[in-house]
Image 1 (cartoon, rainbow, N blue to C red):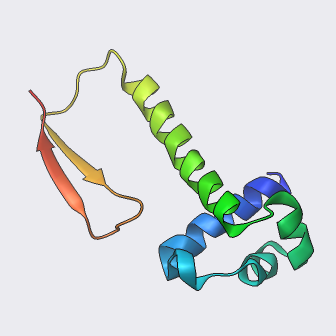
Image 2 (image 1 turned 60 degrees about the horizontal axis):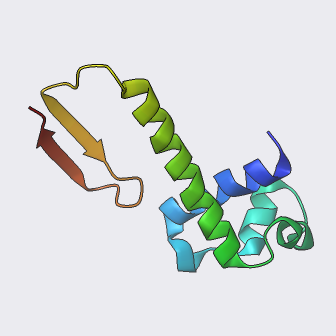
Length: 94
């Protein structure tokens, strides 16, 4: 895993745990084991990092979509939102 990927994964975990506004680049630097300027080297602004986390989830969903293409969907499907852990939606596919 590259430093950039480690930063993104750490940000994802902190967003889930604390929320976007409650974590800082200092928090990320401590977890990853680098200095704060190194985080800024990869992501000049917090918004850039937030976008990278969202793009990570989009790629993950695209991979799942590709894997499911052509396969029959189950009758009961549970969707878990990565951004709202308490949200569980049961959807019926026909």
